Length: 417
Image 1 (spheres, rainbow, N blue to C red):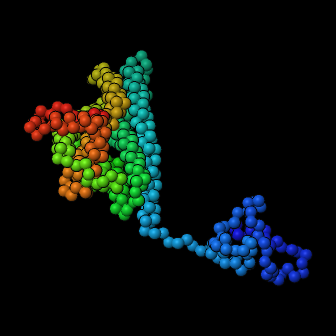
Image 2 (image 1 turned 90 degrees about the vertical axis):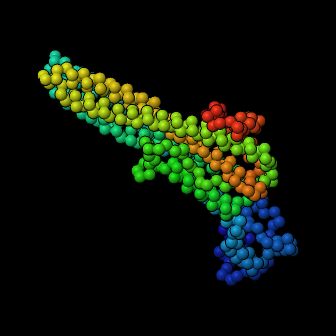
Image 3 (image 1 turned 180 degrees about the horizontal axis):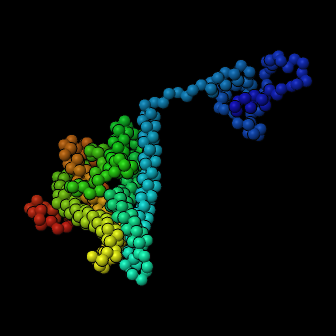
């Protein structure tokens, strides 16, 4: 279009000429400085070879034909780079989706908790009013109380099944991990050109993350009350990272290998084991609260329907009021205290330490030194992920010497949490 606009300026039409339909083959002189005309022209090849800037109509047609040609096909490196940028776009989109859904599910937890407590306490109040004989016919209060207690029991069962606080924690952690994956890819792109293997590894990490933290509730939701607690796994099989910025395989020594073995031992027998125990404790507490809440609300619903029975006396009213108050208390402890979130947090911490173990072991098991990550960089990275300095990591390895029994190891490797 710029060329057509330029041609319109160079060859203006003339309506007064009787021979305007004939083609003009004259040579015109093009101004050297086109910027004063406010016209932008495409780059014309070999323009420096034109004498005095004289361009013919035939030459302009040839230039237009050249500019309309399709660009040259992308090279193999450009294709790999395009794939990596496509992966980065998908990662950014996933992070945004998990952040939005995490906020939504956190709102669920607050709304369900406050709503169930309001319903339960209102039903308890109605049951108490129905038990007072001076209130007249208590039928309306009895029915209303039973309906509200039954609704509260049903909502408690649903919330205990899906655990909104645990769902929100899953999405929060997934958002952090998706963003972390995106940053790691951007960092690698800043150091070197990607390869097909880099693209494959990035896709594998994406699929592992999607499996560990699914977006949909049904189907695909993670088991909220597993029979066996295992650390969360959000990574594929770890391969040693060979960095081109540093000499791969350098920095490794016998002392560093022993240091890494000591760190793995502490991570396994102390950190991971400690968080698995805490996960089991939180899970058992959550199971007890998730069972007690609906049972108390259900018992209160049945008792409210028996209020006023001469055979039972004041017992139904007592069970209704007290059961409703206890159900609200249990619901507050379970969902207001976010016990499901605590369980998920402990399980994620155990997974974090399991991943560090596998990362260290993958480097130690690699017999070819040039295939390992640089030893000095790797040592500093492990120390920082544990919240320690390099010197503190070396002290930890000395603390976990082979002569020490597993039961004697009291210090944890991680200091972050």
